[in-house]
Image 1 (tube, rainbow, N blue to C red):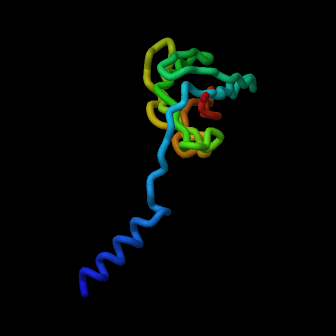
Image 2: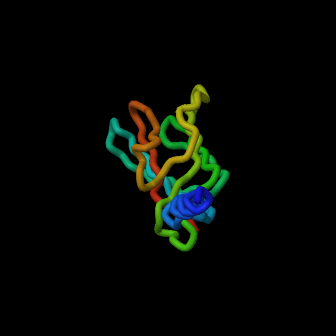
Image 3: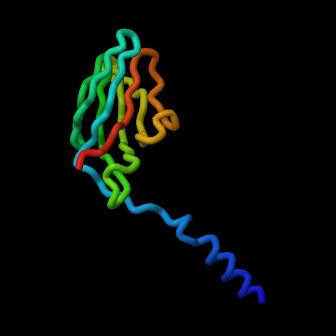
Length: 119
């Protein structure tokens, strides 16, 4: 009897709603940067492994991923952002296009977020 209940619980917990989504790796990412002082926004068109400068920041894109079969879906990118002059790391981790506030760059002057992956 216990095995029957255990099997039922495992099958309910392992249903399709709990499956991990398979991700594809894009060739790069489109990021948007905002200078909050002068209101200027710029897009950064980057390939995986690329380094770009935005204002006084250096942005490194390790990779961008998106849901397999849905290139317009929620992209997420692994970014490392540093102050250019000092080299001090300000952000390192995954940033999600659909929820930029979930794991944001904390900087008084600049905002950077992911728009989409490049296919």
